Image (tube, rainbow, N blue to C red; front, side, top):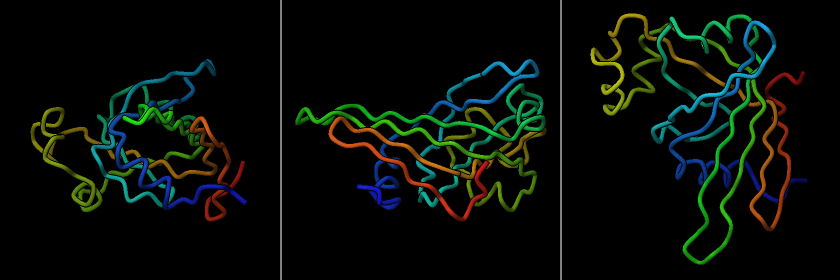
Length: 150
């Protein structure tokens, strides 16, 4: 039984804006880039990220939907180490403006100037299979039964 619950990890994720999204390129090599969740975290095992359609990460996901996310929170003011999260998941691409609207925040206009009507926009949904965490005092794994395992 994990020492932390998914609810506890959700509260931690709300404090972390950026993560690293890992995909595999056409040669099988890892390709990693930062992505922002912009606080869109009521975490139930699914993460959402906006991107342009014509990017390597999208073509990587179309070829191989297996992805990884890593999140890191800094140490607390009291000196307690931050938390590290590694999420093993499956990505899917959403092209539905209703879903865009559900996950949109105004700050995205920096990258997508026409909002959800920006040409070539896509929403990447990452469904977690398993979450691993470390916080300097404890570590654990949370398998998510609602998602297929590999």
